[in-house]
Image (cartoon, one colour):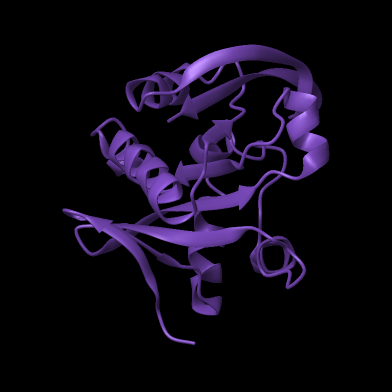
Length: 180
């Protein structure tokens, strides 16, 4: 299968993850600045780990590479929440999607690209996947990401205590949502 462009918005393009992208993920996920909030600085990825985690055929996540101005700069994935997770979050009889993302090229941080990415992904999920809600669960201490998500129309719903083991300590996360 060739490269499939999921969507494009100006200089931003999101395409399907290809096997050859494993080196990009290994580069980004071994950078302490990226790992500070995504996976943890004590949990760097090499090619083997990237291949095991990101290229699992049974995985129901749609995994994508983010490009800006023709440069590969980050990663985004989306998935429909299962019934168990929806119940845990308090959602019933709705089509709810989750996303996870990071910009791996640090020089692209703080330029509004994350906000453009998140708003465009939400629009895609609502229009093409018929999502009723889109949710994320960033760590409460990840203020830069939370500010980006709030600029993208997400609202804080509730604290998820001890949600994520990160660098040897359980971190609280915010359940945040975008509701159409």
